[in-house]
Length: 66
Image (cartoon, rainbow, N blue to C red):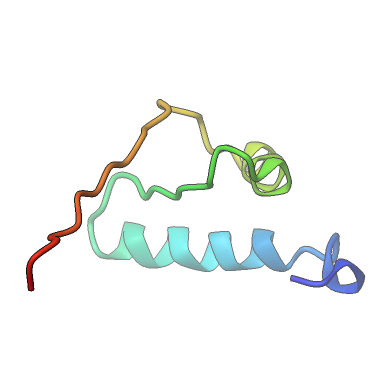
């Protein structure tokens, strides 16, 4: 999101709507992920009561023959 739109509470409203929806579905939690180098994304999640669980490294091996 562009900087002029940050800090207006949009993420908080979206998370509240998602939380209400998932509770209504019987879910006990919902998760989100942020790339490890995305410090802004991490700072958005922390005040919304998200808890960091772990760091993950994803790997892929592409087929060389198609």
